[in-house]
Image (tube, rainbow, N blue to C red; front, side, top):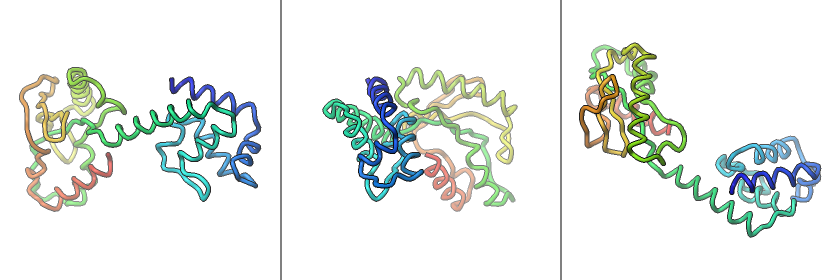
Length: 215
C-alpha cells in the first residue's frame, strides 16, 4: 500500500512544476537545496522521514505533509501511510540487529591499541536491513551461509586478529549460537561478546564505542 501511495504522490508531483509546488509550500524563492530535498523525498523509500532533514520551515514529516496538501492528496489516506512509515522506522531503530562476531581467540601481546581499534570492525559481520524481522530459523540459516562465505573470502585468516576459530551468531543482545567454520551449530552462549579476552580495558571501551557507531 505504501508503493501505491508513492506512485500517487510521484504522479501528482510530476504534473506540477517543482518550483510551483515549493512556492505553494511557502518557499517564496525556491533554492537548489529546496528542489533537491523535494526530489529526495520522491526518490527515497521512506520519503525522507528517516534522514532527519529539516530547514527553517519544515521538518522531514512536515515537508512530506505539505507536499501532499499542495498536490491534492487525500490527507486522511496520506496520514495513514505516514504513520505506518514512522512506525516501521521506529521499529527498525529500536530493534536488536543480529550480527556475527568472528572469534579468533585473540590475546593481545605487543599490538598497538590504535591498530587494533582500526581493525575492530573486521570482527563484526552485519546483515541486510530487515534481517531481524525474519524467523530465528531463517536467520540462523542465513548466518550459516554467511559464515561459509566469509571463510571462503578470508581463507580462515583475519589479519591482525589471526586464525578464525569459530563464529558467534548473536540473535539477541546476550544470546548467541556458536558456529563452526562450515556453519554447523556447535553450541550456545549466554552473555555479551567476550572482548575481555583481549586483556585490555582500553580496547574493550574502543570496541564498544566503534560497534555502537556502526549500528
